[in-house]
Length: 315
Image (cartoon, rainbow, N blue to C red; front, side, top):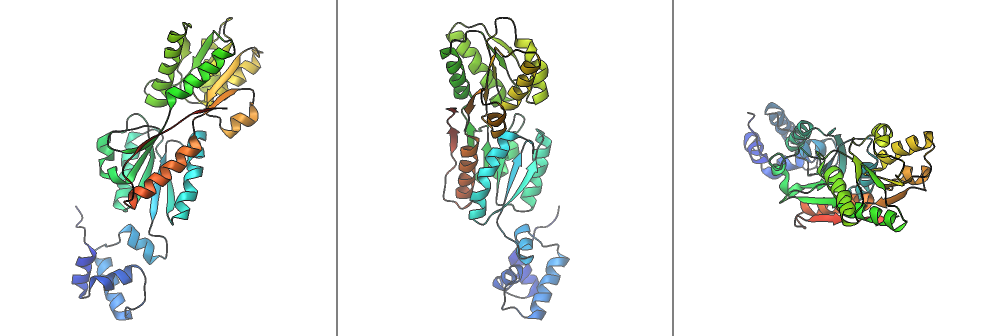
């Protein structure tokens, strides 16, 4: 295991004070050419290049945060990231983007790299499979998105509330045969919680549930929509906009224009292409903004860890 030297160690080996080493690391004036060269030689010999110092020596920002998304092409996560970035830029942070592809191993690998580089903080879009043990070293400098964990800061969506809003809107419009297109329960939030909210509403109002849970992809919405459609179906509720886009294509191709679609998301693409679909805005933009402000406050030690839930809004 590599021996981690401190600025104090470099100062001792170089025969100078810590403040002199700090000036060299930050490329400041007030250090003679010979002394600077001696300190830099010692640092090179001992492989002493902490990421913040390295950035400072290159004239770059020494404040860096990482945003780990599940998929770079995720509509919802991109909406959240868009509102994070202005807050980070305003406070002098350089954000870097990483992708997990729903792999816990990739998250562990990314966090290990970020820890070795002394990144200030992390916003992590969560999913089932991420463990608290994996996140423990980042407890004070991490914000989880879209899922919560005891003892960690998080910004979540009101998954149950979003489905209740849509089911209520459909019910008030006279729909009594409402099917559901969702995500497997291995995804706790988008999958289990949204499906369970649908089942609870059906039980409360004595509706017969018809559901299938294929996944998140648009193609899955297209291919699996017919599994929950029968002659009585008057409405189809989709757990995400991407599923709704796929289902809409199926309905259009099969001339099922008598079925009302509803979905959770209200992404710009959905509202532009299909304004007739009833949507709920889970607050992706607000969530991104709140997450960035929470992380900035945490790393500056001005904010305790909070678990924030963003309310949904019917559009």
